[in-house]
Image 1 (cartoon, rainbow, N blue to C red):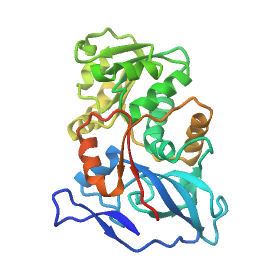
Image 2: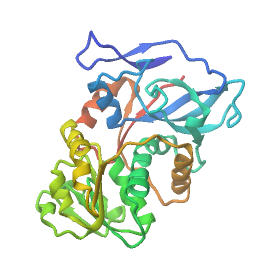
Image 3: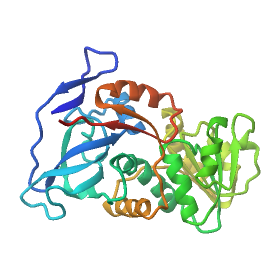
Image 4: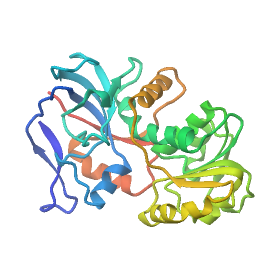
Amino acid sequence: MKAIVYQKRGTPEKLILKEVEKPVPGDHEILVKIHATSLNAADYRSMQMGLIPKRKIFGADVAGIVEAVGPKVTLFNDGDAVMGDLSNAGFGGLAQYVTADEKVFVHKPENISFDAAAALPLAGLTALVGLRDRGKLQKGEEFLLVGSAGGVGTYALQLAKFFGARVTAVCSTHNVEQTLKLGADEVIDYNTTDFTTLPGCYDLVLAVNGNRSLRSYYKMLKPGGRYVMVGGSFRQIFQALLLGWLYSFGSRKMTALSFKPLRDDLRFLAQLMHEGYLQAVIEKHYPLDETVAAFKYLRQGHARGKVVIHLPHE
């Protein structure tokens, strides 16, 4: 099969298209013929940190068709359309086929395209856990979303509206219209307004790759307010892990998001998309052999929604 393989030497990008052996499913695994996969910051951040998958194939979000099942598989049959998050299962999505434990996948609703299904898992789960579990977002609360235009941000905005919050979103001029269309009650253009000067009036602040200090976010919280950081530079993540507990001694709480993806949560998100509460925002599509160019674009940090890779099949 064709795959994008990490190769430490030989190319500046360390990613090459090559033929590799097609995997065989184990007892509890399914073999998925991948139709689409989407890129995430988790892919290139893992490369930067030297965390290379055993198979040397990145790609967490996948959608495709089950081609074979292991002898002890009970959840799927050959021919089922599925979607899954491989970020905790060895990655492997940048290939024509992948094997993983059946519990990593859920059935793809019929009215969702493979592209939309591949764009949902990791970004959608990150937004869900950040809002519901870490952020404890409640109906009627004031929610500030910093970074509403990317993959996580577009889902966080829609989920916050589903949960009944009032959403103020921060983005660039270029993304104001998209953010309003996704349902934001108010949009702040960070090119013209310093949103950190706003008074402490938010119950929850979710910063997606936020580049401001912890103190600036802290001042924007109401008493009892929560701040959740999603991604960001290594310096910002380190700062949140090192100093977040200091800011959390009072009623305000500050934390950086980390989590293990759960199958029930992905099924919940797929159902929301099936029912029309969530839509995938996909800006660019690339064929597998242009994956390096897709990563270069994603690393610039200005992608609107998701970047999807299409897998070739005869």
